[in-house]
Length: 153
Ligand code: DAT
Ligand code: MG
Image (cartoon, rainbow, N blue to C red; front, side):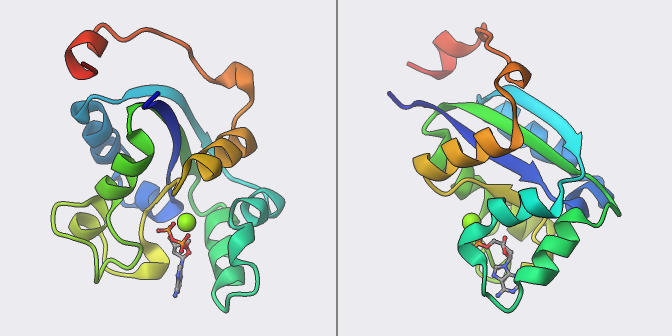
């Protein structure tokens, strides 16, 4: 099924820059369903697991510090809907804002790869891993959107 879930997080710079509402608005307006939402300052262990594939990169320590130093929390979310993993990545835009297409979140709201305001899972396997890492099962809401018959045909 294409009814899938993805992990989306507004990073601390996105929270500081008051872009949480704008980002939620884009996913809601697209027709996606919010099933998980919380403010949290992740531990270094959590951030390290989240970015495990980047261990050894020169920017890894800076990345973990920026995510975990508590200057602002992360807004962790789970969104559900048709093709939401791939569509979510398209809505975010390329990792480097210099390469992000205009109209994407990163192109519209940021300039630096190291402060690119938002995370989105890049595959089904990543989404499953990240949702499990950031949320307990009882923090996810199973609910039927009244819009579903109009958005999901
Ligand atoms: P994405 O967040 O688009 O999945 P990624 O998984 O390759 O990109 O990297 C995770 C984050 O690490 C990215 O959003 C920002 C940071 N990052 C990646 N490459 C970087 C670089 N060359 N310099 C600084 N930060 C970088
Ligand atoms: Mg990634």
